[in-house]
Image (tube, rainbow, N blue to C red; front, side, top):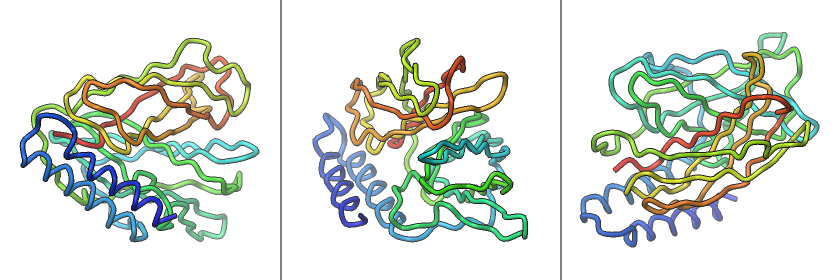
Length: 245
């Protein structure tokens, strides 16, 4: 799995050169970030010291017959954007033992990292696993210090995600296609699309999908499967950028 993932990301690194009329410095910066993420993805992630500027809310655990979704609310208390934040999620058993759920090196980079949190902004991060999480276990999440400091020019690239009304009709594990549009001239690679369903103030379903490449000012659709029951819930789709300038 690691070999296939590395080959895929390396091909993205080559595609950076074909991303349009950009400077040599921009090409080098994007390629360096992609390659840094390849290397980081080959090491296990286990965060013990938290980034003080990031406030981590109580994770929501959503169970289904086939998978478990963990939704982690996050907010950046600082005046600058924070990128490439390692994150550990897991559960504490009744005996006090901590079990990490996303420590494996076979996971995608963004299953162990938060792409970006804007300055003084709130967001969320979604992790999907096929492991069963006991009902009486207590979930935890820890966000570490930024691993990389990629070049940021002005505001963060904006990605619109729309979810057609009534798109999800199944009461459990529903799926539909979200429309994703880049409002920026910055191409995106390994773009994560998250969907969270909220009903009566509670997170009741969640899903994530990956778009390997979204061109500058490009538009595409992606299929997102929701874990949980999205019936009569408000769907909140979003896609934080992965390339920033």
